[in-house]
Image (tube, rainbow, N blue to C red; front, side, top):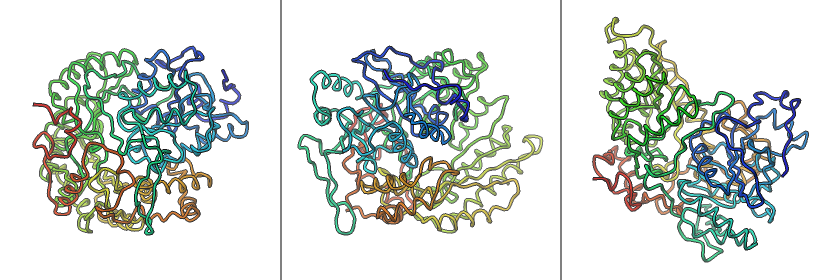
Length: 615
């Protein structure tokens, strides 16, 4: 077995050497036999970002539960380490055994955000693996991708061998069993790919070809292997209480972005915000029981020694057993002196009451996401919350002892006007006035109100997948308008970079031709594009010109319902008809009730499980 020698002299030359050494608490060390299936789980960002990712923790332990499989972790080396690796010809390696990436059977990447794609190309090259799938030979690993961004896999289609659509616990065993069978039979790479096309959730891009019209839009998708399915249906875990969940987490050597126990309460979301891809692709809602969650909480805390536990789901306050669960969890954590961390909550009385119990002693900041400043825009995006409810929730928070509040909004949403942008400043001002309207003896002194805006990015499988995105110039104009509209010194404004948001839209809604943009940008030195200090807009503009990709064609162009979209061969359960109807309702600023209030016929009920079939 080949291994990379990490000498002390090498590690002393890099920042945070603990990123590269492995051997953490609860990581695996296995004997590698000739028949061992070796799976490199690659996160295309640095160690402390990847170690915060729940999906990696789940699949790492899920795959390692198999005696015949050794799953090891690989992260993107930071620029100082990469420089040394290139100078000294050190291949990219795994943390567990320090094996070169090229020695693995599978090299799997999780696609969490589009601006990490150049890191994927960089990691493949550092690992000695040909970037283009057509250039790989029998000795090379199979490159597989999954995760939320894999629901439009086409920008990476020519770089990857396999795309996994859906939740990893469902079909990975079948995939690995097929691999063992193929290895015994001694077939070719192409034979293996042909073997796996019938596995639910598996998409093999090389068996398809995109045909374009003269206007640049997609004409049709042509199959070059008859047995390949016309539609790839996502796979979901059906019974959450019975599904695999790790009873331990790998504890990183250095502080991760989210350095705590993470407890997944349920998957999916009942709310149906029209900009939110996760809310559509993870349907239907499937919850874990209170007893199962408390059992995992106890085991994870004991196995890690963490002093904080985070409740992770898309809309935590919608958990059906939340009052009873929260009460028991708080009791358990108080006994163990463990903090409870809650994500962004709905602005309502129950959420504030819950935060009051969780943060009884040490009050951190509260985070709310109204998303839009005016009622019209909240109705457009189907946020289903009124200004009165927002201000009432904030008042309860201020009376409960909080003086630090963060408000998240989006700029550039479809059908937004100048008045809607100014409405964000007006709402923030009303929140501040609410604070000063609370009697002095009932509130903490020193209001700190942070208004944060991100730029709207139209995503596949949302009602806004057909929408035009604002240009970078338009986003900047709105940023400046909002900045000048916020005058109160207690309110601080910050915003996301508009230029990366435009590129994110290009990649998110891209077809296979966008792969040439990614490759050209990478060749020009683009990596770590989601890090502001490393993003180079000029290189991306040059790459667009050199690769013949018009950014506005993918980002700023509104699509018709008749246009064939690059991701329409993927079936997430939610129907195109429903997404079209929701887009039309957005134009009329008409709302849709949430799933527990009334079924809106999105199509996810055909998956047969979850909230659609309860009661």
